[in-house]
Length: 52
Image (tube, rainbow, N blue to C red):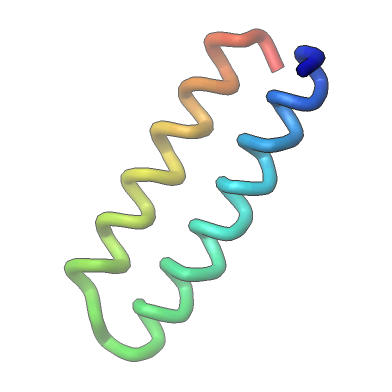
Protein backbone atom coordinates (compact mmCIF):
# COMPACT_ATOMS: atom_id res chain seq x y z
CA UNK A 1 0.00 0.00 0.00
CA UNK A 2 1.42 3.36 -1.01
CA UNK A 3 1.74 6.35 1.32
CA UNK A 4 -1.02 8.26 -0.50
CA UNK A 5 -3.37 5.29 -0.10
CA UNK A 6 -2.73 5.16 3.64
CA UNK A 7 -3.33 8.89 3.95
CA UNK A 8 -6.54 8.63 1.94
CA UNK A 9 -7.73 5.81 4.18
CA UNK A 10 -7.26 7.95 7.29
CA UNK A 11 -8.87 10.97 5.69
CA UNK A 12 -11.90 8.87 4.83
CA UNK A 13 -12.04 7.49 8.35
CA UNK A 14 -11.85 11.00 9.81
CA UNK A 15 -14.69 12.19 7.59
CA UNK A 16 -16.85 9.25 8.62
CA UNK A 17 -16.11 9.84 12.31
CA UNK A 18 -17.06 13.48 11.86
CA UNK A 19 -20.42 12.51 10.33
CA UNK A 20 -21.12 10.13 13.19
CA UNK A 21 -20.14 12.71 15.80
CA UNK A 22 -22.45 15.31 14.25
CA UNK A 23 -25.33 12.84 14.10
CA UNK A 24 -24.85 11.85 17.75
CA UNK A 25 -24.62 15.48 18.80
CA UNK A 26 -27.88 16.24 16.99
CA UNK A 27 -29.48 13.35 18.87
CA UNK A 28 -28.14 14.86 22.15
CA UNK A 29 -25.88 11.86 22.75
CA UNK A 30 -23.05 14.07 23.89
CA UNK A 31 -20.76 11.46 25.45
CA UNK A 32 -20.45 9.43 22.24
CA UNK A 33 -20.29 12.59 20.18
CA UNK A 34 -17.32 13.67 22.28
CA UNK A 35 -15.72 10.25 21.83
CA UNK A 36 -15.91 10.48 18.04
CA UNK A 37 -14.63 14.06 18.14
CA UNK A 38 -11.61 12.88 20.13
CA UNK A 39 -11.05 10.06 17.64
CA UNK A 40 -11.28 12.55 14.78
CA UNK A 41 -8.73 14.86 16.41
CA UNK A 42 -6.34 11.95 16.97
CA UNK A 43 -6.58 10.96 13.32
CA UNK A 44 -5.84 14.54 12.33
CA UNK A 45 -2.84 14.54 14.66
CA UNK A 46 -1.64 11.33 13.09
CA UNK A 47 -1.93 12.84 9.61
CA UNK A 48 -0.06 15.88 10.83
CA UNK A 49 2.78 13.65 11.98
CA UNK A 50 2.88 12.14 8.51
CA UNK A 51 3.29 15.63 7.12
CA UNK A 52 -0.02 15.74 5.29
